[in-house]
Amino acid sequence: MLHLVVTVKQVIDPETPLSAFRVDNGRVASPPNQSSVINGFDEQAIEAALRLKETLNDVHVTVISVGANFALDVIKKPLAMGADALILIQDSAFENNIDPTLTITALVAAIRKLGSVDLVLAGRQASDWDNGQVPLAVAESLGWPSATVAKSVTVEGHTARVQRVLPDGHELVELDLPAVITVSNELGTPRYPNMRGIMGARRVQPVVWSASDIGIDVAAIQPAFDLIGLAKPTKSMETEFIVGDDDADAGRKLALRLRESQIV
Image (cartoon, rainbow, N blue to C red; front, side, top):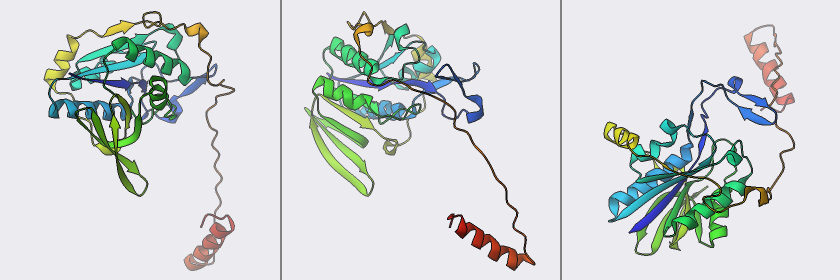
């Protein structure tokens, strides 16, 4: 059996208007009526895993997420898409956690607890902090090879072949399994759960592990960085009217003003 693990993150909906966000004691808060979503790049990783499941025999897809307060109707979406199992590493220590060290430690411990993982797929980055650190740090901690920003992933035997996105094209790489691969949006649109998948997901209960269940001591983990400050960006607007003797004169003055301001 080929065992695939997909890491996903529950995030604030990136389509939420900026005016709805607020910063409370150094933490980002969204309106209580605003629902969370699965990180978009992570949905691409789920799609990559499901495509492998469709093309290969005897494939099991396990989804793992780390957090404190999961919305089950949101976090169960991978099951509705076609994943086989969902593991939630849920602990109050993970609430509003922005330091990657704790998440990395939890994911590595969970993967080791599973014991027979062949390939880890993850989104290239998360839409909340956009760091893109966790998957590669997981690979380094496990001592596995890794490939990033994949637009396609295939597996043959004990080898994964990855087509990576480059600024001026793409490249093909091969990795010995087990390995970690991050998936980009160039993979294509993730499938939408059908009614059968949604109903089936409702009957599946996720496995819930606490920090102690995976054998990590949260208090002993040193953070990678300290958050010094967090604030919403301030915006200002200035309006200047350009007046000329006629439209042509106003146009010339506008062009000159734009050049003086180094806008054009």
